[in-house]
Length: 202
Ligand code: MLT
Image 1: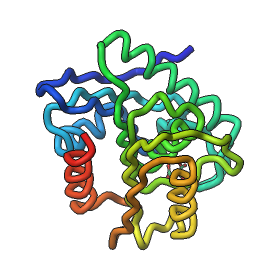
Image 2: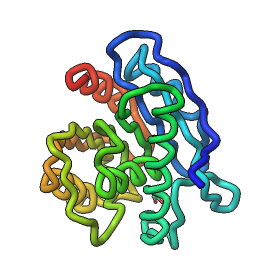
Image 3: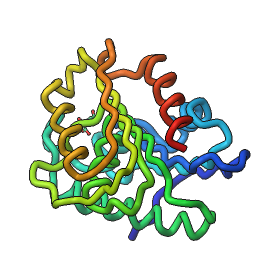
């Protein structure tokens, strides 16, 4: 069962890559539509709602504590999201999307990149952490990934985001990792950097 409640906004400009928008804990399918429009005007936007509930808050996988993941669930849910993308691509006639994930949404995007690399054309990972302690050997074949971390993020230690960047680089992705003077929340710099990055890779 790979049905997700979601929003889809068709492309309004030719040549802009479709975006897969993945919200953070407690968000929903509406949260990142504005961000998507800001960083890539004209792109088709595919925005699912996470199917796991934590005290009523939607997420993309279960966790045991903040930053401690139920990795079996991470694997299962990432593959489920991969199936959703396959179905949505057929339904809406879109190319493989670039994921734009924030926090929990960035973590499931990182898991998907490691477990099912073909699902995504690339990714913007905002405040992501290492999603799996023992990931399979992935082949990311030069996929572009922008990883934006917060230097004062209380949830993601600097060593963790550096490890994620290394993991993705070793798997063959073209990773750009920037550490911003920010916490876990997004800042204007995230929007500006994401917009410039996507303009260069797309
Ligand atoms: C997670 O659970 O994915 C991370 O702790 C980020 C969060 O959702 O707060």
